[in-house]
Image (cartoon, rainbow, N blue to C red):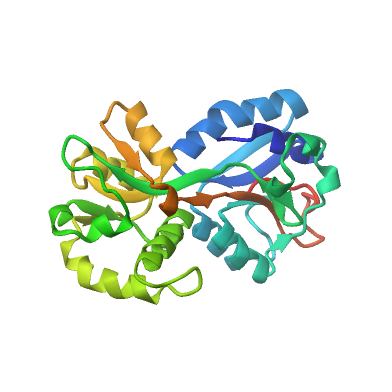
Length: 263
């Protein structure tokens, strides 16, 4: 899941230190245990990681445009568009990526490098509920008060919203049908997670038995010894590809903006 090699050549020119946000939870654990030591060993670059979700990263940089708190962003496609349109991101020069030949062309563009790709679907506890066969099942009475949700501001939340909308006549650009269904269904939701990271805890506590999420969440739960499985019918699959982009910094900043890091 983690493309360590996308970081190394980009940090090599970073004057010995790169400040980067990282998603809380498994991402942070993996980067501290694997990526940061590898970067130090290969390029003698120290990595300062700050756990933040995508939209929180953007909010922080917006609030301090004159002195951005990061050298890079780690953003899913949706939030990345927001950052780009807001002028927070500099373009990425692919020729600076020394191992570009090892990556599929679709994994990098003028705005950065993809560091992961996941399947978005439905996670459920097979000991407590039947396997959901599709997105519409979430709204069936047998799942009332068993489904947990988090905000739709994440990439997997947005992907889920789009897939739900498609089941009711909507599309990629028309998610109104999903909101209509959700408004009627909301009273039957078991719990609302404060953020995606809280989903793991709520699942383990038994406060939810079904939720829309990514495959990483299911893997993390299994790794912790909890019973969970995923339901992602072929027709319902939505790829989630966080991308790595550099944050725009003014000329006075000591870290060159040309040194990109995942953001």
